[in-house]
Image 1: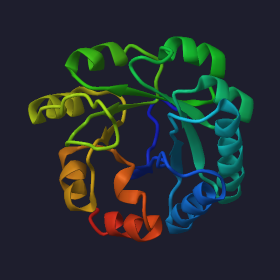
Image 2: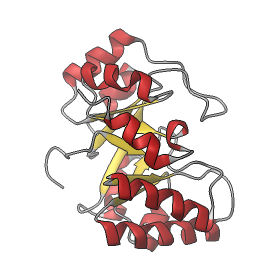
Image 3: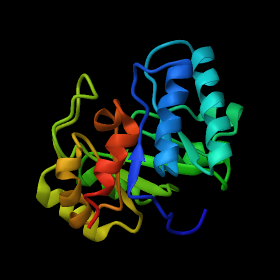
Length: 206
């Protein structure tokens, strides 16, 4: 990977409730709208189902020039050949994940405060995620919202591109891009009519 990864302005994450053909149809709408980086995130269901979902999405992404990142699961990245993994604070550390997936894969790493950011920039990650930047409904027990002053400090200091996550909608997207976030990771606001929602976000680009 290059020293500083180039991220698209919007980074969709798959909704938890979508499975099989419905998931592929959802992703296809986004790719047709212009999506070039997609994250597969699924917390429930069997590993067999997860692997099938990743393989189906990867086939679609390969045909459209889109990169596919898998949330949490380094093993699914290795088995499927997906383009990378996104790791949280309780997942395998990026250093160990890099040893397993090699230098050619994307590694993203979530942070929620200044202390975690300080530790993260010493890790072999390609981008950092920071959040929640707003209150979010996509997690049962979300971390506290990151104070604006901390967001601004991290954005000023980060040697890596920073992705905002948490409660992001077309209505607040422009503010986050202007604040200095490279990309916005979105789940809920893209869950329904994803192509239409994508275009609503793109209208807010500064």
